[in-house]
Length: 225
Image (cartoon, rainbow, N blue to C red; front, side):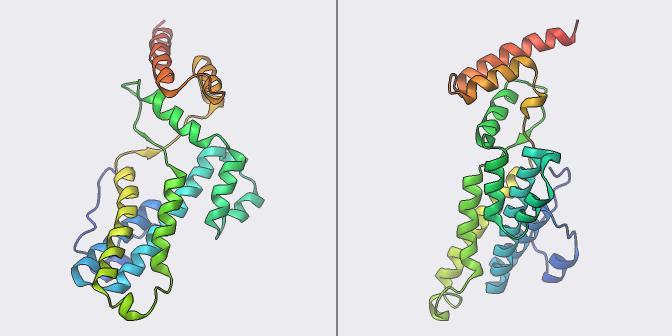
């Protein structure tokens, strides 16, 4: 989460590659949006390619962050090596080490929504991120004859729209809150019991919220005794 959100508009190429260069999901998407802004102002195709590259890098970093959040210190060296340079493996490793990640993300959001003092926490839809990765990657490969692609105004306009949608999805979430997830081992007994029922399909998210509200009242009273 960014406390002082930087402005990615009206930056020069020199500024984009030398100022505030951070190699994480936020840094990459910040550069991607800076390149997109430059591309829109100058109709520059190279800037679109750079934006697509940095957006894809941001997505890959987000997937790796999800691996770390899911398993923490349980990520061994061999799995780490498999993650490097292969975004598909990142998703496979998340599914293997934490097959309930998507359920846990939804459960986390449902529980925290009932606590007015809970910090804003982000969870990510991996399928959506992978879909964005696929559409963005279109602009990292040969697109056909120049007159049908890089020399076409409609091709450039479409590319700008596609890459910007993915980049803004990440930027708007990252500048609002921090990524996080509730791990079952750290849950209060009441919450853990509800999580186990949720994984078995015995309750839905609406019931989780109702139970979380009740649990919050109980736990708050327990803390005050």
